[in-house]
Image (cartoon, rainbow, N blue to C red; front, side, top):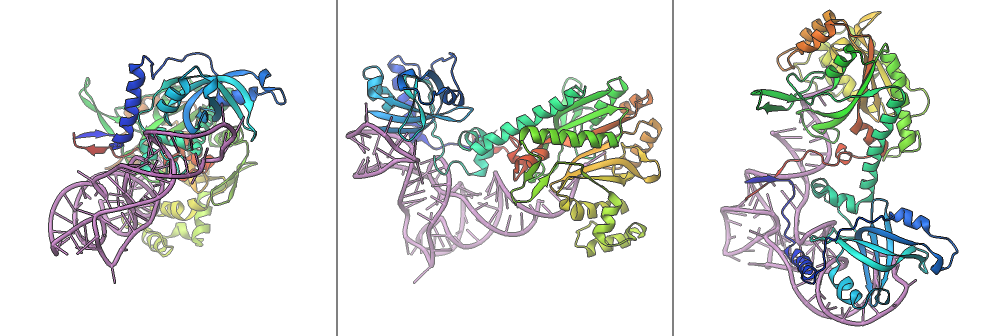
Amino acid sequence: MTDQTTPPDNSHDLYAVRLQKLEELCAEGRNPFAANCEQRHTSEEAIRLYKEGAPDEEQPRVKVAGRLVVFRVMGKASFIKLQDRDGQIQCYVTRDELPEGEYNTYFKKKLDLGDIIGVEGRLFKTKTGEITVRAESYTLVSKSLRPLPEKWSGLKNDDKIYRQRYLDLIMNQDSRRRFKQRANVIRAMREYLWARDFTEVETPVLQGVAGGAAARPFITHFNALDCDFYMRIALELYLKRLLVGGEDRVFEIGRVFRNEGLSRRHNPEFTMLELYQAYSDFRGMMELTQGLIQHVAEKVIGSLDIERPDGTVIQLGGEWREAKYKDLVLEATGDPDWFSHDRATKLEKARALGIDVDGELEDYEITNNVFEKLIEPTLIQPTFVTHIPRELCPLAKITQDDETTIDVFELCINGQEIAPAYSEQNDPIIQRKMFEEQVGEDVQDMDGDFLTALEHGMPPAGGMGLGIDRLIILLTGAESIRDTILFPSLKPLKQEG
RNA sequence: GGACCCGUAGCUCAGUAGGUAGAGCAGGAGACUUUUAAUCUCCUUGUCGCAGGUUCGAAUCCUGCCGGGUUCACCA
């Protein structure tokens, strides 16, 4: 048994037909994978070159290349469309404009939908007004041995969309656009941070202790050292070491790995932006985070109003709402004495509110269940939730006038947590204590090396982490995190062999 | 891991009072020199996810497995 990602393909007949065409081409001394490195125009560039109103013989000659996605043969003339990274361009190919025999013997007979070809010729406009290349020559640069999905319905099978993403990208322009937007989001983020003197760094993915978050890590084995390593679950502890090392403003955009379930909002590997700014705090992070997301939205979407698939408009403009965790809980439970109740009463009341709460949970966890299930989903418009109970974040500073809470915000938009930010804890003694409070049976080992770093002195700092995949969901209206990740985690297919 | 739903041609899908399968597109042959899901004629295509079971007979009913989706659990 071998594992593989691509499902078996039984299209032997179609495959055989194409393979035969390929062999025939080779037998006649034609290369079905011809090199073609000459400069060319993208479909969009070519269309822009068209001179409106000028006669055909004064139109510029262009050279385009792309995947053959429309192939309409009408006797001695054909219309085809090539798809490239910018879109599609139509080409008009006639028998009389190609070399003798070329059209009937090769063009009509040896090309298939899915092949990649280059076409050269002058632009003209068809009688229905479409700017088109009148082919003077064409070159097959890659024969496709497998057929494309159906041209009208396209590719809708979820499994194939994820397992054979290239087909999705060929067939579904929405998908192509979404991933382009993802790339642009990340680019816009970098621009924003670079402009504010942040340095981009890279920290280890393989770690002896996976810290910085409470999540189960993936375990791997380091042969040379003969010990188990963990895939990182957060970027935090290494970035803070850099603050100790004198970097004032650092960020990293990178993959983190959490060995947990998959869902519409969770992929085991996902991309985080984490940034740390010395001499700032969570208030500074608020300003930065709001500015960052607004910059990205404007740059990539071109608007601060984001319409969700259900029609609700998320308004990213202006100053965002700020709300205390406790106030939200009191409001949602309708119980002004919520925090005075003992554990058993909270449990009872939470259940009365329709929340399925595990009886083993700690006091603060019950409250947090209320927050996550009752409140978070209602926070559609951007909201900074502040004054969060200290038990929930061991790496943040305690609020000066309320020792039960920490200087933190959780930014919620679109009913999900998008970005938490802290006034980072830099007192190594308190930090050690808070780690010890938290290190239980199923929590990670304490990162002693990190504490040693803190003991050398870390400047006060604000830190922020942002789940990029979830931001993309928000900005593009994607239905699932899988639609924002090119190759989401899937179970490998098992196959005899 | 639990619950529910889904898996039929290369693609998108029809097909249940159980009688071993259809359409469109794609593919093959032909006609057609401005098409827009081009059109027209003819033709081909399937271990009905896999493995068992019930039955004279299973795409259809039952069980298990594989894969996917939704949701819950888990989740800083």
